[in-house]
Length: 220
Image (tube, rainbow, N blue to C red; front, side, top):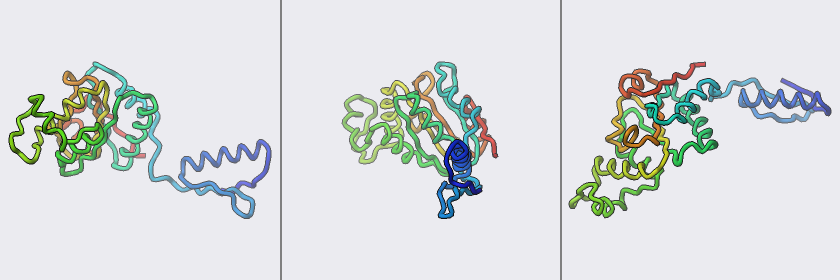
């Protein structure tokens, strides 16, 4: 597309149109030597999140004490990841949660790695918590040199309960994941905790994770 550089209203309208083109198609707008603005009609890799779907997700995140603690987002990896990032930006802007925690699950979940990701996000270092755990009688560590999964889960759960509101985002689920084993409290244990799960598999979210609200992204 070529638009001649000039002044006045027509020039401004042309720039607005080209900016729109740039936003939707991901091509930089520049002024060539011949005096024409150029914009390439090339599709972007990350599609824009549908407004209605965005509102469904935001409504589910805002609601409290109505049983919608786990929200499932089903779509392609690229689309789901892009959509979640947009939602996180909106949540941060609106100040809905005290803390936002993200972790990637992958096809073969590494519970320890997931716990570490969440711990880092909420300021919990497992290397420095042995004395705390012993003094509060959370778990008996004995002389074990390495903290066990259940011990980390106990500490994570206690730390997250200190946060009035927290959003936990888990990317790339391929099968059932035990949230209790990780140490993520929700529902009666912590009604200020919301969990947003993304997966390409509808059955993983609906049947295996039994999400309270399921939102399917369009493929276009």
